Image (cartoon, rainbow, N blue to C red; front, top):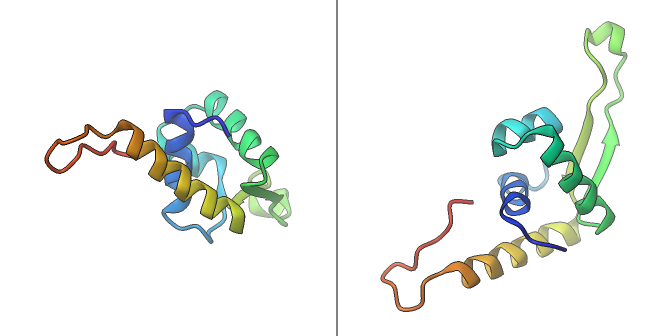
Length: 105
């Protein structure tokens, strides 16, 4: 998995509640990413097996909105995401700095 800052932001948002179903707009608000950035990341995470996705079972007419596609980290995805973010923090920390600077993701 290619780990970019934007991918790390998406993973960090998903890890705030790993068992929760999250939909695109919610993730866009949580990460500050535009849809054109977010959805390719979600697709890469799905292809890697880190993320599962399914459509909401709702009648769009009755709900007054389109059905949402929900995303959730898989069990392997939770573990892989935590390891990837820890490695990214390790790589970006300043050796010997007091309190080791940590990125805000």
